[in-house]
Length: 137
Image (cartoon, rainbow, N blue to C red; front, side, top):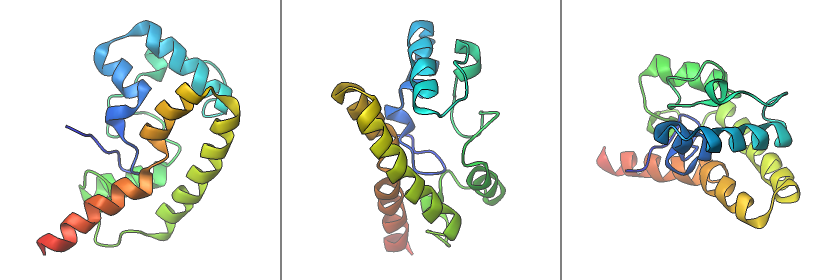
C-alpha cells in the first residue's frame, strides 16, 4: 500500500522511510550522507537520528507548518483537506521544484530517480487524493 505524507511525499518510495521500516542501518547511513549532501540536514546524522516512521513520528520536519496543520485537522495528508491546495502548500510545491533541480546536479541518475519517486511528485500525489475525495462528495 502506498503511504503519502502530509506534504505529498511518497513515503513508500522514500529511502529513509523504507530503511527505517526495514531497520537497515547501512541504508540509513547512506541516506544520512545524501541528506547532508543536498542540504536537507546541516550535518551527517546518525542512523538513530535519521530514522523516520512517517509524519506523525518525526521530531523535525522542513514543512512543520504543514505537519502541524494536518495533525490539527486529523487528516493523513493535505490532499484530504477541504482547503487544498492552500498558500502554505503552494510554497512547498515551489520549493520542491528547486530541490529537484539541485538533486539533478548533485546525484547520479539512479539516485535522482529514487529521490524523484519519493519527493518530487508531491502535487501529483495530493491532486490524485483530492480528486478522489471530490468524486465521493
